[in-house]
Length: 220
Image (cartoon, rainbow, N blue to C red; front, side, top):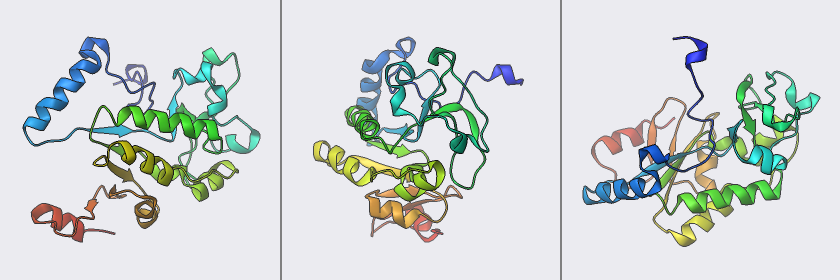
């Protein structure tokens, strides 16, 4: 495999819709119904921290991403989308205060209230399409982590958003991918389950049995 064979990352998101060639959103709804008849639920992978370079917001709402500065570009490769007219809103991605940078993504600005509202609307829409979400690198939008990474404070995002979504869909399930010993912090934010750095899944249900109980004892 060569570099040019890779068309993009599965975490470089342009939107949460099913491609028409796969049947569109109606096909997803039918799949969800079939899963329910078998006692299964449908969970999406939600990427809260960043978008793809060709996300519609790049042109429609460049203010949603972190503006490139000398401070935020240190340690990261710059990637300027052609559609941005040379401006690099949030170009590249720094996954956290202790990790090196990645290219091919635009960092969302969680210090901006409009960005948070836009991501809330995304989750409200998703909550009508599935039964839960696994939130990729969910700890990156925590106020302390965001400030250490990008040099500006972000208001709390998760507690307010989880409450709003569950107001409409009380059974909706939130799972957080989390690192850096922040598992308990994410639970306090309102997450019911989490995935940890060694890919161990821990459930908070008190009467877990079998494999679930084994996983529960494997908490870090």
